[in-house]
Length: 98
Image (cartoon, rainbow, N blue to C red; front, side, top):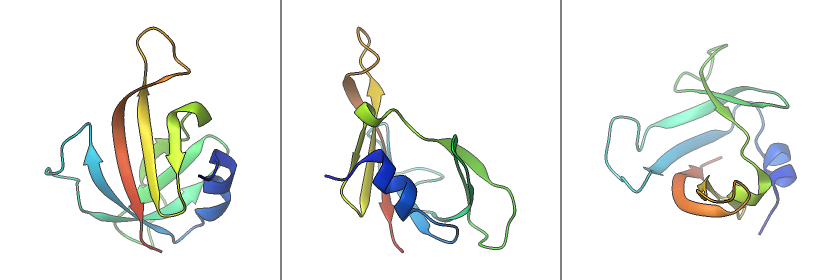
């Protein structure tokens, strides 16, 4: 498994990501849509279907304890109700396509 720091380094402007599932749902309006990283900073990144866009949908970096990253798939978990640092249910799953 890779770390949050690895993810931050691996995702560069122009990288593509596809939302695979959202809170257990694999069908929906935004699922399966390829989005490009159009901007990133220390707080999060911006995704947009248009590679040339300057702004997009903001996705903040999760806590490292709530993240699983293997180099191609990003899994972001919802914090456990009793402890913010422990994984609860699976929230978002992204596939990095380039």
